Image 1 (tube, each protein chain N blue to C red):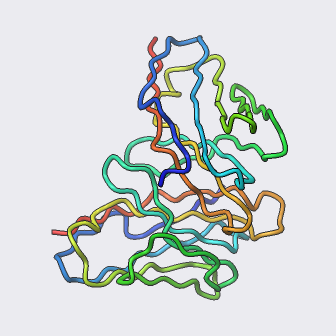
Image 2 (image 1 turned 60 degrees about the vertical axis):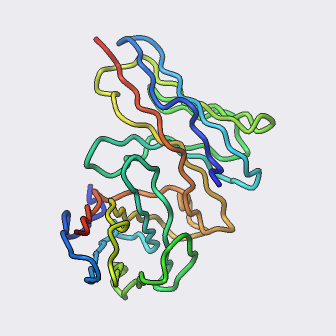
Length: 116
Length: 113
């Protein structure tokens, strides 16, 4: 079965640079979530989108922005990168609210970002 | 603040025996509780979930029990297999937050032959 696709899988950036992470949800999933997992930490919710609109916002820094496109893929844009942004970034997708199983999120393999 | 807590960082169990992973939560608004399994350098894999209106859900070797009055849930794996060795995350969500997941810090399970 098709899974969530994330690209790139690994990314190395310098401080103050920008990065764009991409996420392609499972077919028919119209909801996308972004999470950040620091070393030895649990995943922290950043932001989510349903039908191309932001549906909820967590601990996402103002330097980060995200959007969902008409084909439901999503991009997380990170600017003025800091050393502390080094982490695993996971994207997850689910069916939309009101659909049976909407509470279940399926995760991609993650993008490992290293900021030097 | 951590709304979902997994107080045991690690657990070691012999193959064939039962593994019991515990999770506590503080937010009584949570509607769903989910368990994910994670291997290093991979994304979390969904295992099993339970709605807050139920007290038990079973899927093959995995059973989740929910005790709402104690704000406690547990994942039972019977029988445990070496391939079950991974980090297990407990997560919770509620409809009004768009199902955003609140994770515990995880429990590392080691199943020995």
